[in-house]
Length: 185
Image (cartoon, rainbow, N blue to C red; front, side):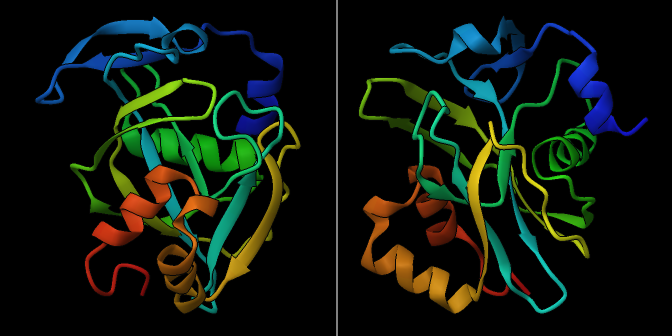
């Protein structure tokens, strides 16, 4: 049974890891309850996935998402479970949300942190290492996670961030602006 199938049939409490300003774990909280108007700092991750042609997978968040519904963003994001290795969480989410296998994971912004407030007043407050990965798979996204996806030329992504940052998730815009040269190669 794949991880995607196990996640669909296994009921587990979905906890996030709360951290202090230095990234030291300070406990846990249910993911469904932690995102609100006073969201505590917690551990997350973002991943930018490239295909064999060097294109970046961008996703549009499902309209049912609690925060930033329908907004275009990076390939996928998530929260590692307490005690879960970050790279294991990256693999788990790639399979669960997009139906893909990723390889060649590499951290490009290991200390990335952001805080943003959406139109409904929900705060994102995350210590969110950013990774780049590769895949040979065509995404088969879950409808409750991803409304649309596209393989984009990185130059077009840079143009979109410069011309219309309001059309993208705030964390993705900040990540793109902070990425070191050559991060998507």
